[in-house]
Image 1: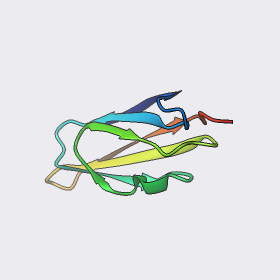
Image 2 (image 1 turned 30 degrees about the vertical axis):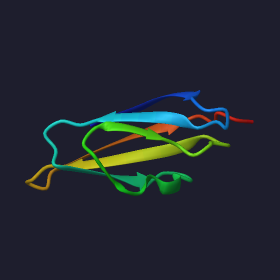
Image 3 (image 1 turned 45 degrees about the horizontal axis):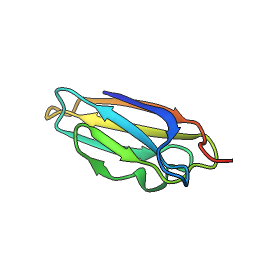
Image 4 (image 1 turned 60 degrees about the vertical axis):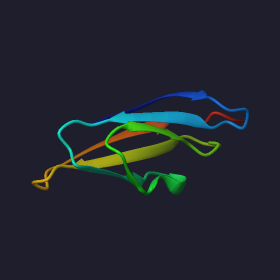
Length: 83
């Protein structure tokens, strides 16, 4: 599983986009990094997530599992996009 972000604000209030992809997995969910906001939800196996406005660097984590229970994880640190 891969997760990444440019850290560039895509809205005037400072939200940024996190993108992830996974292969050979059946379920993905996200866990809080530091102040991960509402990131703790089950997600599709690939896609994008628009963050809340970030006032400090924030870690987003993803965990994907396949049908046999094997789990892979990844994380990305998104820099703050507003002062």
